[in-house]
Image 1 (tube, helix red, strand yellow):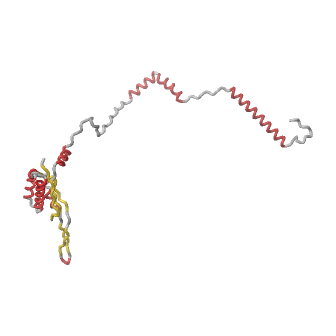
Image 2: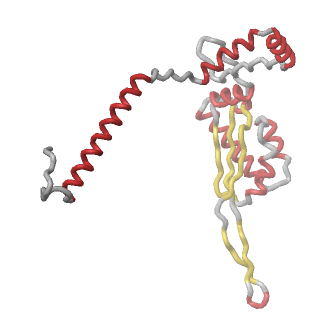
Image 3: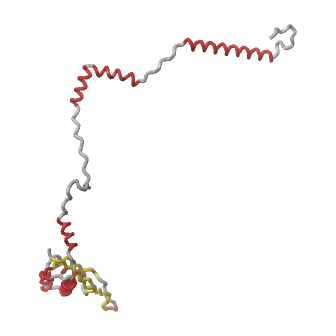
Length: 229
């Protein structure tokens, strides 16, 4: 810039002052950048920081190498209780084919399987005019008995339902002989049951024009025979 002449109209104006301030600020920034670059070149590079784990490893090694540390470690090992031996895993119940022979069936299971293989003969009497409770008192004496024993029990029983049970027993024996070609004297009673049938409602006249209900119960008698063992 050419020096302003005395009497120049631009000298002392606000625009000239602002321009001078900007030039001074730029000069200061350039000087500061040069100083920072020089300081960065002169300063040594920073050392890499070591992790804490690396610092503690040599210390631990040196501490473990000392005889005092070895003695303390042996004492700690002696004081610690012995660990219990690991439990063996339980073998599953399912066995692989070919590893071990299969276990023999239980006696009860064998008896059930044998009973299913034997022929079973069935006879039934329906709508017998007796209650199921009274019929069960007799059939409880017949289960598991042979044909001869069942005939003797029914022949000497004092209950009237015994005659109905005797008829059902003889019907079952006839079915076994004619339908399955079995010998009647070689059979035994496998099951004997009495189920409730329909109840007949009746009434009895009473005094003062009243009536009392009468229940005439019925039952279904069933017997199954099978050959003796």
